[in-house]
Image (cartoon, rainbow, N blue to C red; front, side, top):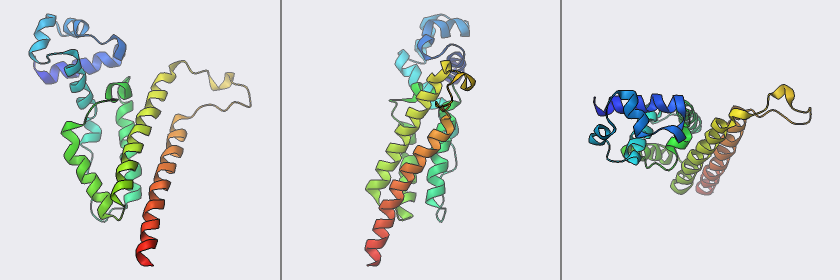
Length: 193
């Protein structure tokens, strides 16, 4: 049994029972080991959850970085969508990720920021837009993953629209991008005057 096996099994357990029910006792039983043997790899449950969160983010964390000359607006949207897709890959993925510190991802974040700034986006608005987009995405996925008991759209009164999580996400993302684009346009106009 190695660390990667423990994390993979913990993520499978998460998908089966949800974050509230994941425990080191259940994980040890699933792995066919005694609970104290997990402490060889993870000193606390918090350490285990952090490793699970990092592993769960692998699809987004290994996505191609933006390249010089790429349209920053299209990249910004794709980056946020990739984050959302990754969070949705695991049950309670947003709850697992929320509050984690992307220690292993700091270089990637710096490179993404450098790309935006090199593309003409002012640094401060770029930082705020990336932060807002990340928190917005987590919030959207939290709501979507909590929406397991939503009423059937056919049972709703005619004047109550069915909730379409993807459309709501796209609309909010467009608003964030629009705000960031205004900062960039204003800067462009100020420099050409």
